[in-house]
Length: 467
Image 1: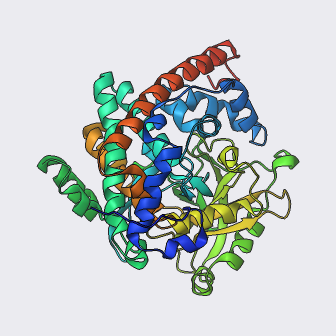
Image 2: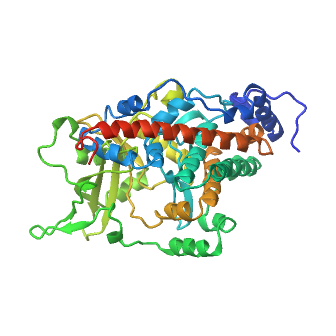
Image 3: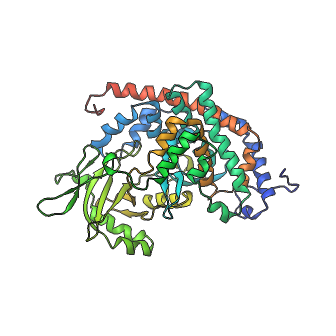
């Protein structure tokens, strides 16, 4: 039992992080007086129009791609949730929170987690999307979005309300229990904590699924031909040069007569990123030469942003694909109360480096000198372990919820004090129950918003809705 007879200092104090674990735990516990854990179960939507917020998020996106975004968001309530990060951020800005700040993912739903191979060859499970990341955001923001995504997904799969609520509760329970373990580690030990996929899976999944995961973990190189969303190469019979194969509407070369207002100098963009990479990585990248580039449509919430891939080749024909992705202002600015001051790509990169256990070797940021658009750059990999999340979601959603909850706790503990968060959550399931209740209320709100959105889509012309 962790107790303290001394009155704890406010958790926001910078000096407070150097206090003993007992005092930090007690400080979190005291926050329950101002923000009872039970109050987190409530949700009442503020006065807002989901379609208006959706239209606002489209304001700076590429108009030609908006029908694809509409089409993808209209597929299901879960697809709508994926594309509506700004709407949920606006909703959460009006909800009570204990005030325990962390580096937030910002778009923390179950499809933004995945498995990948670290530079050391370990198969890790981690968050893999940081477009909306922002510092100084309450830890419950990510947790509520993650738990709600599981409620929405479970209901979409035909689960009962009781089952969907239990699965959402799994997220919170796993988060709380893993945070309690991280709180007992030194800051250095917590920083180097990893979610090793096969180790974590051993106590979660049945033998048949475990065998499939082990097979996936040993599959170091997937067949690119099986991944239609990964660029294929075509050799120019005249010049002998390799080019990216067009695969419209997902991957295509931008026509020469493109709208000047959306023109981006890709060569300059990739040239600029070298200055934000570590010197040894810049040295490595210099061994390759940019030979081709093409536009690439990605995700659901990202559709309409300027995203492209660059094909880099060595003299001996070894390919390297880098992706450049436009970084727009974070949806979490609704919660922060003030705009982010700085380069948006740098915001994404710094957030990813803080939260992720092993970041991309080529992660950097850059600005297009022509359009002024701000980007981040990363290594583009083919599927390999990318289907692990889809496998777990479809075959073991309750256990997958536990895995994601543990992973989010690990990511948050790198920038927040685990003991204080643990102290607020406590050792029983009061907190978990509140998050589960919120998730079901938000799933109902998401369905209502989705219905309103699809009614709007049905009223559009076929071309406008991507039909």
